[in-house]
Image (cartoon, rainbow, N blue to C red; front, side, top):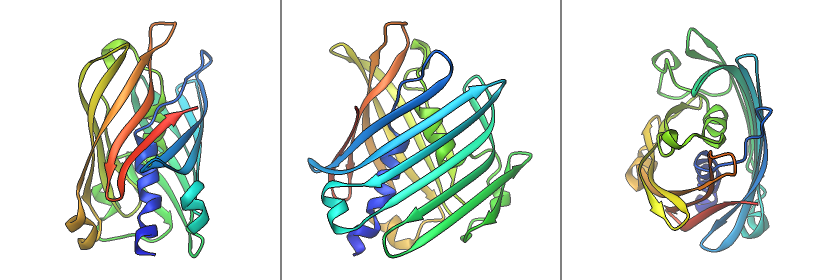
Length: 236
């Protein structure tokens, strides 16, 4: 069960590193398959819409395959806020997590860029010290949008989920056949248990972009090493 305790964060972190198609009307609607050590581990569905300088997004992460046989894990989230270019300022975040044995809910609102935990357990980190961070679902949506050529591999997101702070960064774009390959890192920053920090704090990964007919780029695949072996996320 200690192994299973880590599967949901792994799937969430993979989701943060994935990509999806953004349609011309500013909407996103996609499904991704997640595999760990070559075995199906779950699916991610993400939707989003931008209009009038505002965004709204939802996500559902559901265990499946081997993980689904051992435990039913489900993560649902929604977020909304303001957007200007590639800058996001969330105003509300709602999250529901169900590990099969335990359910939890987190709600955050934002005041002048500072998260306010309205519902859910807080940790050692004071939300007042997390000004400028975004919630996990906003980070997912920000990573999923199609990007122009000069924005490929330039993601740098600071996240706060009500208890923990983490970061995702991309760098070093280079050709890989007809794709662009990036180096990335998911990093646990603060608020994690001493046990988690002792195990591993940095999770390197590779991200692959493909060029779309309109000249923009989107993420097709993510490959990363986890505590439990090679993990891959691919867009259907």
